[in-house]
Length: 452
Image 1 (cartoon, rainbow, N blue to C red):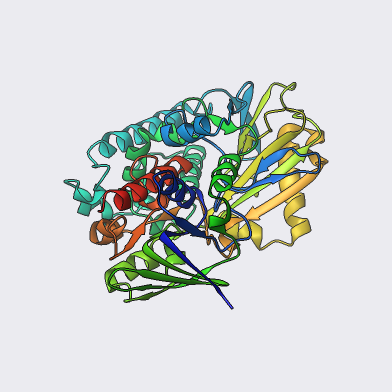
Image 2: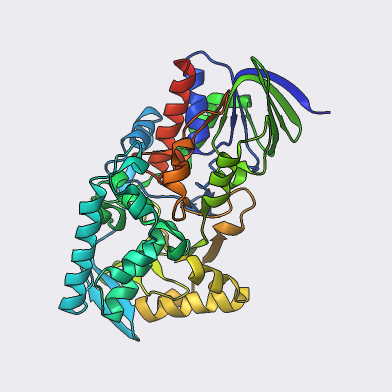
């Protein structure tokens, strides 16, 4: 028999959006219940501890210096951060040639560098006219929303194959989905939400500048500890029924009666919940269209960060390979060395189709070619194909196909009766990032506390 609970608010999902919502409500005297489908908290943040206790992040891991909300939580819970390792040369592999470089753009042909810089400058310039709170109201919103990101890449003026492949991979890494199926308005909104496209691509002063001592999940763990038994794991929500003054949420093993519900799961997962009254057609269309793409993150663990003494940063790129992008993801202790390897979109799907042993060999061969013989013998090889995770269905965030934001974007944060919405897809500032998720949790809590 299911447990029957009562609370002021029931929160669906124990990622950073859900935990922040619940924490702020709890701190303001509201009773809460948090229902999480997984057997762990954190959502798309997943810190795993190795045999020696070292934390590694299988999901989101990096914080930008402008991520004020998540940094506020790290201070609140006494958690420290450290800088991503960037010293030494980065590597670009293209056409069978390995090119060391420093800075943001590799030393490919001057024409390629110039055209990439011009394309990025154009994106930055256009993004400045996109309102953060309502990007669909921009003067040229309908024009931009009718176009795809692939259209922009085609029209970008980047003509050399090295430049084109590099730029396409970088943008594909932002959304992970098919760029033909991603709105150009969404790209402009994403850039506006982070200040510049360089901020999204960069380590220093950018989205990958900082990591969390103890792993990105440690703040979530400490929030959950404050909430205690209010957090229920292995409790996927099956239905949300609204009455005149209550909401009943039915999940595996538990039923919650509350005054309000806050749904924080990715949009595609909201469709797996039965709503009564049903979600209107326009909202169902939004959640059907707003899907996250294939992304795989593989952690390759070594007994030391051997690339550092060799004068390498650990950052590398090889568009189209089974290790498209790598970053140094070594824990703060620096005792073990960790490279995080990413593949995006169709490349991730192609890699996933390989047999496990073949995929591992392909990744290690690529890393050995870049970083030397020591890369061939890791202590651990941890793969996470995020789009195959039942309660995630893709990373790092949902992307919006052409025509969706201008028609349905206004519904992203609009309450549905007593049901409120949070999650990084609903964020304005820091859209798509951990910080964005935290901001939406604070917003959803404020809506309820202020009676909105």
